[in-house]
Image (cartoon, rainbow, N blue to C red):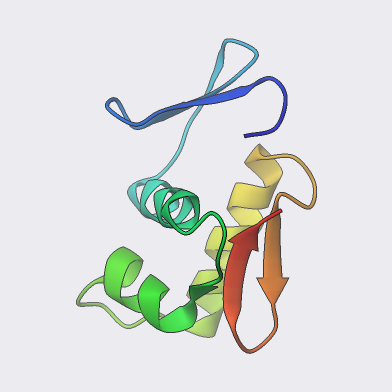
Length: 89
């Protein structure tokens, strides 16, 4: 994680300089999947399976989730690879 950020895997909480950053269930699943795939691209099919599970992942739902996460994390931390998926910078 970038300077000043910490993630507690056991408690599923994110901190920035000791301030708690509130995350939704889907945001937690999304960010943990990116962490697990740290050196590779997290594909749209992986996101569908791991984050949306049995629900349908729409383009709008995915964009909204990423937009909200980007507000909580440093600029350019989550990178979109058009047509492929996402990865961490």
